[in-house]
Image (cartoon, rainbow, N blue to C red; front, top):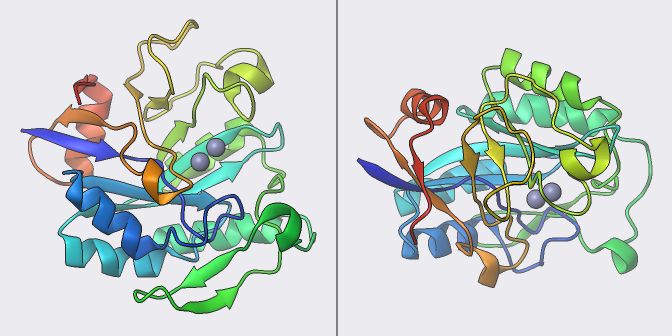
Length: 235
Ligand SMILES: [Zn+2]
Ligand SMILES: [Zn+2]
């Protein structure tokens, strides 16, 4: 079956994410757009993932619990987990590694943890868009060792991407790659290339997505589809 997936999105926890992009509204908007597998991947933290799980349950969407890690080279990498607990543990690890710089909401925006109703339950003080201090290759290895998907984010973006910051894409065992525009003018080692919204505002949810040919709706089937390159981009 052909499954519509969108594996890169933010919430109001990311300082650059709009305050009204709550996990619940993200899930509802994705449901309305027919997205069946949806990831929330805030910068260097997983604190809105428990609410995201509740929202996806109500919307009958298969959730992927993500963290978009900033490496020491300032490259963004999507790490996407099947299990909430594993993502929370990895998120705490990454947050712990961030330098102790306080967020200035006037400069960077708010970092809000919210419940299903969108009420603020916590404001995160540590700036979440610093670099975690882990190298690009170590993030890939660490994520894969925890049975997460490891996907270099927006590899063709002008900043915070493998091609921009490293100058090339190292040949590592990525689960897939994410690009903004296709085709990518670089060596991508025949890896599956996904398109995803990277939404920071509600109106950006679903602006890019793709379809995977999957046997069933499961994490194992998703991994298999990515490994076999069964992706299409029709909208
Ligand atoms: Zn990014
Ligand atoms: Zn992002």
